[in-house]
Length: 445
Image (cartoon, rainbow, N blue to C red; front, side):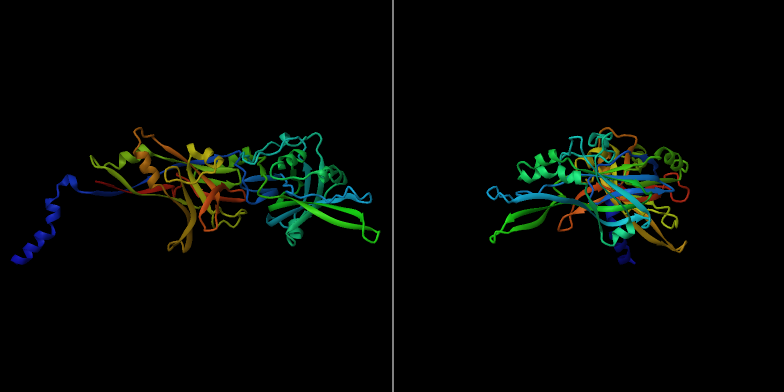
């Protein structure tokens, strides 16, 4: 008995010696957040893949998508010439634009008419300047004197078999392009080509049920020349040169939502649900009650440490059989104050301004189904805000659908706003069954 008593005393010795003021406090708390739909007029257009066409969705309304693109001249290329041979003749034959696309969205059998117009206002794009998806065509095209250089009617089913659509360009365009015969473009003067030919505007004139996911364009200019061969006979040689829309020039994807006001009224009618729809349509704004949180997490005179702060955003429509658009996979939760500059200046998420959440799921033993959700770890952001001398009552975040670009090693190099079709319905802060809330673990020491 004597020995047992000694052991008990030794086991509790640390807590008996430690003053109450030195004990580490660990506790949990959760906070329901407020949220609302956040409507956007545009996004920064840096598309990896572009959309072309028109589509009507029962929930999100109509979206129209068209494309502006520059062309890159072949650098250090010279068209054949022989000024010493009077029989030599260089002639333009034809020109074609090849539009390549990966896949399509919507009704594959719905016909669409695609028209190509020359950007004829004398304005072209600056490679380093950000351009937005609500770009005004009148700055680049004389709408009263549009110059159509090509047109074609087709459907996605027929075109997707080859993955390319060919547009025969007009004879007047072929003639218009002839001055390039006498030009030699290089890195020093390639801007001269953009002044000569500002670019192409690609749009659809009818069709409202399908979208093409376009990956690029290439203009081929066909020519031939004649010369007297060694046998004193007139010979003909044919060739072509490519003017691609590559990574060296700019493409801008323009989006319009013509019935947005009616869509707003419809989406705002249900306070339990928030919406995120890409591209350039509606996001979600989330308000985090900073002052209320810090007051609740009272640790007296101890130093407050946020160990965990996870926001779970539940998806409400994953099993909706009427859902037309694919569910968004990756969302950036970014401070509203940092939102504009982040995408304009090609930012990367930091622990103090933005966090990335990806779609995840877990099995629900009650419903016998999978629950889908996004999670965001806000511990670092909240800790940084708590340290500020002047604490705001609330801090607002925007939930933005994004795509990530990676390098050869898999490291993320940039985050762009999602440029392709996608949508998701999420449970709001007012949702009766799964309200948007943040779970906290904190300590004081």
